[in-house]
Length: 206
DNA sequence: TGAATGATGCGCT
DNA sequence: GCGCATCATTCAT
Image 1 (cartoon, rainbow, N blue to C red):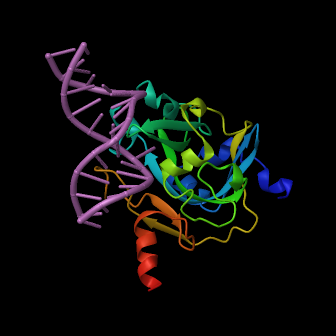
Image 2: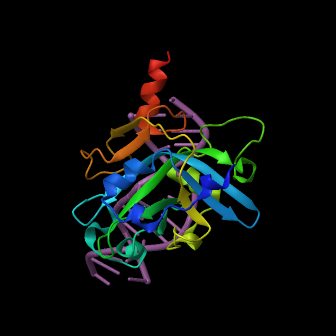
């Protein structure tokens, strides 16, 4: 894949309203340069968590040791451990002091699939990176990467080659508060999307 | 020091 | 649709 596809997006991309960042992330490449090779995937589903007025945001009840990264500068990775077995990757957005982030929920493998945990080389599996926990597991992202800079390090987001994307919106998944907000964004054409849209498409195809 | 809980995924029904 | 694995974090004693 050409070098241009791996040009790191600047911090100014993240230093904007979180809903704008979330929508713009659909179709972009997430790249992780590891010592054993490069992993890349096309982001197809994200959710926005915006500030202390968003009841579903981890920062809703103030700053703690866990969510401190969200209060810092934009363009950093916020990775937390949940349900005793899963990690979730977020991109910190907006100005320093305003806690907000975008959760990466699903992606399509585009490079280094053979290095992704749980992958099979011989067949395309849209479920490999479907779901925030599965994505982190496949990329082997853990709290070791919590707080890393997305602008200049080995983990970053880059433009995709052809990025005409139909972006759909829906309510967020797996939360009990803030359920009415349409803060989930996804690629309407992607088979790798999780949740309601995947179910809807399955019905359409019948 | 302890109990509740969760931005999930999987298998079973 | 439901139960559950499994544990860091948080908040209440």
